[in-house]
Image (tube, rainbow, N blue to C red):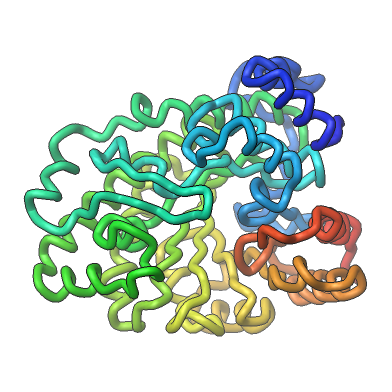
Length: 397
């Protein structure tokens, strides 16, 4: 396998045409069909379906991005996030970088949870510093923009389907699993109503709309749920073997608020995916926040009907397993949950010890190794590589 650095520098030097050359060289045994598979299914796919695998699969949330030099090299030629995520050649290249560099078992589409918004009639921008700008949806008149045209991801998000198809072709015959992802309605709705990242605004506009016009807020969340489910199915049909769903902002809701404003729409999305593509596993993740730290809401996440709950780093994997088992979710697998701060700043000995401790806690149960949150931008690539290699070498006693 070619090194990430040498491969991407050559591609960047040649521009988009250079990136295209990389894509045309599929590995031995690859086929042109995005749905092709080997007799033995990939490790991560099996674990996501509830199998106790002979080795724990591993990938990292936000694994494709700023912590990698080869990504930063591409930023010089493609300075906006939307360029990098919406030009198929570039998105494909970035998606493959962690696989090429570390040998991760999961290869996740390089994109954003906001990517389908223009197809819903709402444009957005992401600055290089990460600031998000959206024309807010706060009135019935605003909402009409979202209902004016049908949602057609195969037309407006065709680049997503193209990248996923290419990933399946590139990885056919390997042990890698292709992951797609979507944002869940409460989180997407928060962005739409706030017009920015909720943490920057204190979620004030979302709270105001829920109180002043709860029916409009629920109509919006219901429409987003319908379209996000459609978008997830489109990703599956394009090549995604597993879908991860993110409800990043739902953790700031009290349990009672969560039950009214997040849970029903989580279930709507997951049940639609399961109805239309029952063989595709679904993983759910919610970032640690005011009311979700320490695993306070993980039983509610499991109740959405997913196959796997991705655990943050504010609760031990053993405790999370205990809670889910006690609540009747013994069949639900776990993903996680190394603290990204340890991966970023820890010594090699600390990273290995923390990683092996989590693997021991998960022994004998379905488990996908990951972080408890996205990888930090300043994480050394050597640390990320050590994490992946530690998981892949580990064998429980």
